[in-house]
Image 1 (cartoon, rainbow, N blue to C red):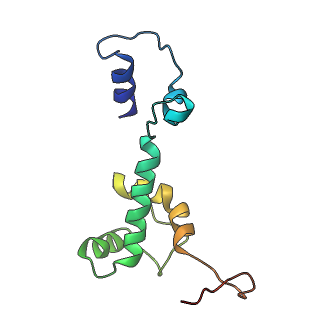
Image 2: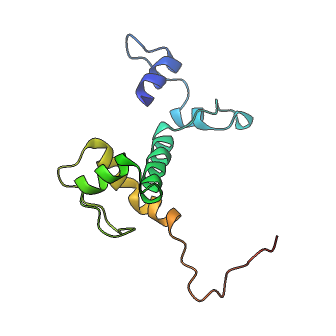
Length: 119
C-alpha cells in the first residue's frame, strides 16, 4: 500500500523515476516541512492490537469464541499465542501480541507507586 502511495506522490505510476525528496521527509509534520503522511504499518499494528484487546474483553462474542477454540487459547491472558497453521490475521495478531498484552496488563504489585485520585 505504501508503495502505491509512494508511486502516486512521485508521479511514477507507469515507470520508475528519480525521487527529489527522501520518503522519510514525507512523514514529517507539515510544520517541519513534511506532508504529514502516516505510516500505514503503524496504523495496522494499532488495529491489530485493538483486535487482540477485544479477544480478551469480549468473551461472549462468537468470533472471539471461534478464534480461541481454533487457535487453542490457553488461560485468560496467555504470554504467547499458538501460531501453527494460522490465518494471516492470526499471524499478524501474534506478531503484535506482546505489545497488546503490555497494554492490557497493569500489575499494581505492592501498590507503592500507584496514585489514586478521588472524585
